[in-house]
Image 1 (cartoon, helix red, strand yellow):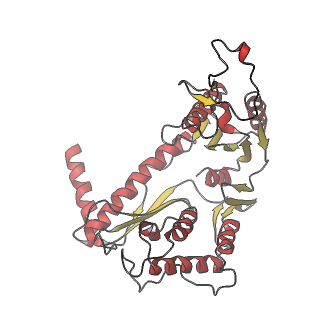
Image 2 (image 1 turned 135 degrees about the vertical axis):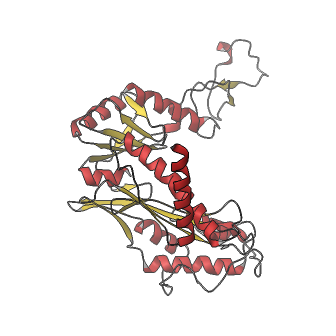
Image 3 (image 1 turned 90 degrees about the horizontal axis):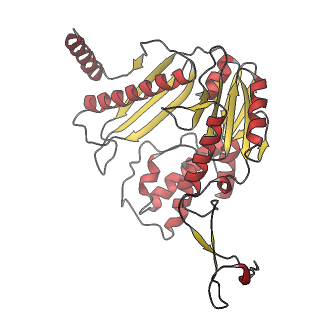
Length: 363
């Protein structure tokens, strides 16, 4: 969403990377650690110490490996950002923004130690860097080129993002650079099920591959990681062969787009042969830029395709409500009516009846 809005309004973007982030957190609990080998301690200066006693250190700052490290770093960073006058979004806790700017915008998105800054005033970015340097050591990476495995390229027409490098590294590590590419990610005629063939001798190989594929998309192969079969591995290899054919696929956020929301929803009734649950899918657009999408198995079993489609529309509506609220934190107000597109007439009629009933209740 930030990249799409930056493309539309011409915001300046910067990428910062904090060094040794977990070491800045202040510990509230009493945590002790054994003295590291090679560290010499004068026992005479330690109160109550004897030659036979085992000395330990009490930690005042968090270390890597401490369970509280990530939480304490987040609390420390949030405190520092509030000191700069930034307000945390209620709808997306990784987003901080200036709430006292009527004509200008300044906001940041945080992922652990990576910070993406967007603003209408580049001078404010310099002020933020100077303020941040008083609290943390960080690398100023300039305009974002590679953020969380996503390649970012910008020109006058807009912003392009892709995962070409990550996809090709994955194919290379799997030893499939010389394989025959595939034009589709999965075989539409083959239905994958649990215990649908010979179990793999080394299931960890499948789990490692699926774990890395999750950073590209969420797909149905992840539900077989507990007991992967040979058929599941063959399907995963087909995904890799598809990646080899389509490494340059990307999302484009046009600078001529309009900040209006629209969403498309769909459902695949009884898609899972093991549980008979349906799949929900939707794509949320800001203008003509795709900013949010989901493909997930529904929590309950639907008795008809219309029920499955109606559930998908309900999930899409929730996504629209969240997106509209978050856009207000960006200083963007959208139209009250957001079009929801669905290809199931029965589900559309159900929505129309529900809407008419709600209007009568309001009257």
